[in-house]
Image 1 (tube, rainbow over the protein chains, first blue to last red):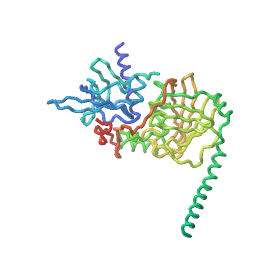
Image 2: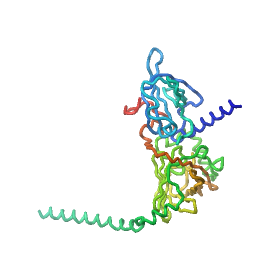
Image 3: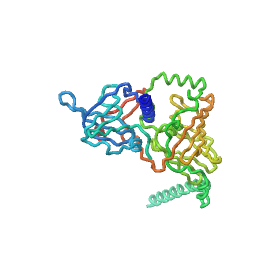
Image 4: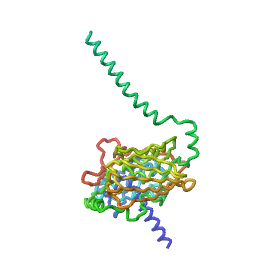
Amino acid sequence: MRRFILALVAVTALAAGAREAAAHHSFAPFNLEAEKTISGTIKKFDWTNPHTWIWVDVAGNGGKVETWGIEGMSPNYLGRRGWSKNSLKPGDKVSIVIRPMRDGSPGGMFVRATLADGRELRQSGQAVD
Amino acid sequence: MRATLSSLLTLVAAVIAVMLAGRPADAQTAAKTPPPATADWTALAKLPDFTGVWEIAPGGGRGRGAAPQGPSLTPAAAAKRKELQSLGREDNQTANCVPPGMPGIMGQPYPMEFLLTPGKVTIVIEAYTQVRHIYTDGRPLPEDPDLKFHGTSVGRWEGNALVVDTIGFSPLTELVANVPHGDKMRIRERFTLTGPDTMSIETTVTDPDVLSAPYTTARTLQRHRSWTIAEYVCQENNRNFVDEKGKAGIRLDDPTGKSGK
């Protein structure tokens, strides 16, 4: 039962998050059914409107590095939920769960991130005063 | 020399004419809005305290209509909606940073600040950096307003409620998704404090060409005393877009090289 309630909370939070993000644009470019984890090094973190963008260097086959772009909620929205422009820094080792781009290009929508020190970043949650 | 003097005199006459032409308009404006007196500022303290930064409360009904199925449409508007839906557009112009206008701008996941000054309520909306100007000085709504994203608004205080009527909306805005509004759309909003830091907004849209019944939605706002309105310049780093066919996309590259990867 407890697991069910937790799952319900998670689904509700996801739905709420989805609705929030929809304020600026639709999810059409992302595959919401799919989930992909990418691991690499933060190249740059754009703390910008209307969306934050996390640029991650990911080592591919044969040592070729590819830069992925991950779209997150706005700094206004995230700033009221515990994030700051310093939440991710160039050089940080990170593992990020995304909803990948439908067209297969190296990008996606942010779901959650885990840093080398175990710190986890999420976008959902109540705004704090 | 004579020619130079003549053109100089012509120039002086032209400048004086322009200055005089400006005067009657100034005088008229001044007559319509006298400067606020001390009593006008004092009177504000007796009004419900709407000041501060508000955001739609969790579960506060963002975008949720009183009627779960949405607005009741006239047959023509229903046909139009079906036609627009069949185009399969993936997004609307907000992806290109065009603000939604009324009524959509009041349902954003961003805060807004209410400012009360004599004869006016101003709503500073964080999303898309928008402002609504609501005149409460008793002026009537214009008979033939210019068409604006937020229309033209006048308000009045009814007990503890601020009642706002708005008309004259830009054809670039929609009533709801895939429902373009008609020329005669009218929006009435009733803002009421329901607690120390809660406000309800009841919004009723009427539109004889589009709606077969008034469309009413209700929302609850929460005041956040410690918040300030943040900057939101949508063009700062917008990588989303929708093309003329309604296809949505994302730019992962940045031709300017300024803010991209």
